[in-house]
Image 1 (spheres, rainbow, N blue to C red):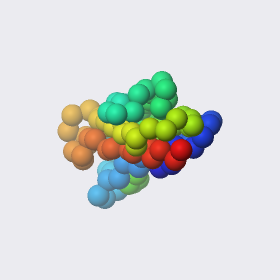
Image 2: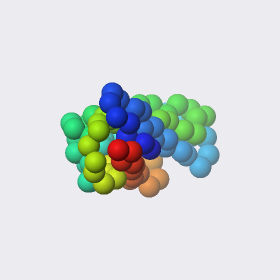
Image 3: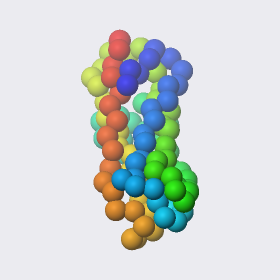
Length: 101
């Protein structure tokens, strides 16, 4: 996503189940800066949500901070987990903040 020159922009990650879940699942996610820095390039996120019975997706939104710095594109990871045995999907998603200056 494009960084923007100021303010905050939402980067949304969607966690998708291959079929409707038979019972509620608590999913928790946290951000991890790779080349992007938490606190200056994006707002750190640690949050849990419930994927309800019959649902197939949940979203986590990270706030990206815009600036006018000329810099390379930057990446962050969203790491998702749950109680062992409830969720078996890929636990890591990568988001890229595209420099637009």
